[in-house]
Length: 453
Ligand code: UD1
Ligand code: CA
Image (cartoon, rainbow, N blue to C red; front, side, top):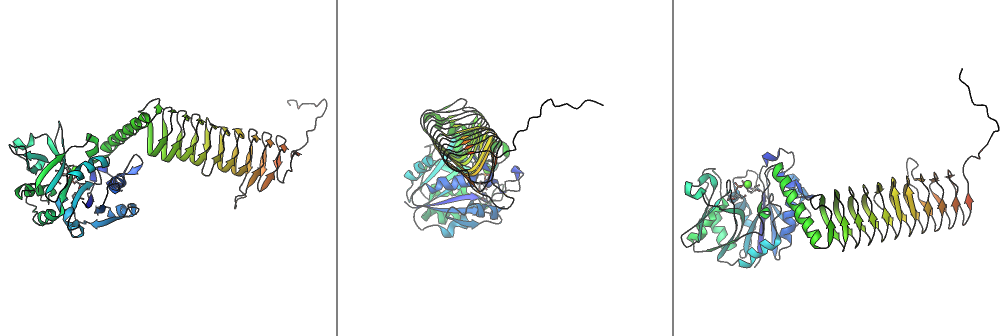
């Protein structure tokens, strides 16, 4: 059956105390509404509608990557009012699934369970039983256990308030009936709003079957109203992700001290020490070991590479069996071929480091193409910037660069060349040459040291 999916995101979110729309606050590095849109997009035959209102321009601009029909609800008058604004865009047949932009952890598997039960004469409700149901709409059932209505907290009687089964807000209603029900909603209630939940009693009255589905866990249906709840869902998601990583063959030395803000893919026998942050799309090959306090963003790390503590890697490709850190910084455009070594206090940027080459200490290597088996001495700097333009440094295979060398780009060092320590290299060095580019040492005999006056 075809499905219209409506994501409600017009609410004010005043308890966030933010100048940004609530649904744009991030969980696991992704805006909440983007998570919901992404989950909804995985459902087959889905047409997305996004209801925006408060700070709607921000939400609309943010969601352009999803092909959602944006519907404005400038003066939000309740969830039923929101659905009514979308009504003209709904397909004649099929069913409409309502989701919330501030309920980010809903799973596709739960929604699929609901879809599987959907028929032109069935309304599917996602409900959950809570020890403390305060604030939620209560699911009212008759003596045969059939759902007959949802009553909002503020409109509930004493006995209804005692009901533990609550409305998660997520429901799937057949379009043929939905249009009629939406048209007959009133705002005659404690909040003076058009309640979407009033369609339940209408469905019961019209003989439409009402079936309920439960989510796999409570976090799936948890909404965010303030930053305390935002932090709680962040921890929940991080915990779920950590469990998935371990189940997939990664060792996390402490699963409560890893943060994945995006997508982390791991091979077998990956070991991740504490306080590492993974951002964007990160791929770790088999046998990769990551020390404490590393931050990896949009990068791929080859099999058996070791990354020692306090290393930062951004937008880079690292080959197999490399050895990086501690305290290394790989900036965008770094590419390490296998068995390369990048040691402490080394910064690289737009640099290709060939197989087995070593930059072990205190260096800056930028805008560089380096061959295989190059040894770069401590304190070597590529002077890549003349104040206006960036220039390329090319270092061929088997070059030895002495410590404290400046390579003033553009410059080439050919195969097998050696550069004496302390050199400032401004012109090309040919194959197997030794280049000295430093003042000669002068020694004076019996030098009289100055004496204090
Ligand atoms: C709603 C349900 C309640 C359920 C609860 C679950 C109704 C009447 N009540 O109550 O049964 O237990 O969710 O959390 O549906 N929104 C709009 N436009 C509006 C009003 C709301 O887009 O005019 C959006 C809000 O941004 C929010 C969501 O809809 O994301 C829910 O609205 P909210 O006012 O928080 O509903 P509740 O009173 O919590
Ligand atoms: Ca709410």
